[in-house]
Length: 360
Image (tube, rainbow, N blue to C red; front, top):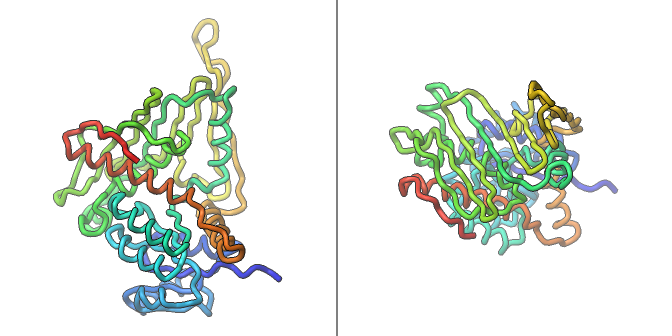
């Protein structure tokens, strides 16, 4: 008998929910079972436009979907300011939770969400898609290779895009009552996560915001950066912006090698993704060129990275449902560490760019 796919309900019809709806349809162990909006017409139109199966349920309130006993898991793409309320309610209704990032406005809020998830035995994972791409696993193999890469020394990450005036005026990511973390919470989440990923999720000792952040009139961050310092001497920096050309670079430098890619969040192509590595690089005798040139590696994937994310999450949920397993703590632990760094950047800006010590 074939396993029954995990039945997803989507709360809110945000633009990113279109991409994740498709991912749920593509994942072999998941299905779209319901969608909810504050407007039942909006929910119905969303389901029709995004290929929901005819038997999918349409709800005109979020609570109605959470009350549905046939829903196993909820995808939550609501504005960050609403995460605490609806994530806690989702957990209390025993629904597993795939939530958009940033996971909360701060770690204190996220800890309340985690408490609800732990008390109700539900899995939580944030929607950082690139970490589920098979390319990411291949790159990690290189970083773990002591001969080719050595010890990690530096990481530099940047995610920016040039937002138009409509975005800068109307998008929820620039509204203090909806997504108060602005570019830090949206683009900065990826830079922070990439640094932690490269550092095997070891938290830094201190985080210091870079001088010169740009805020809008409401005080929401549009452009900022930070440096992270570890006790063993590792250093990392990230920049995030709504005001610069589309850039998604990640460079990790070790004692023996370097990893570099320019599309780490969204690959240039959906079904393959590349990265470059170099090891023991140097100059030729006359210093007119390099020896040991960088090599490019391409990874072909059977599913888009967002569908890989859904497949991973649904597999964890299925293991809980079918085998009575405990929720996997790896993913909420990583989410919490990422949020801790964002909190520290914001505090450093507030305190005049002082270093903020990280206390987990």
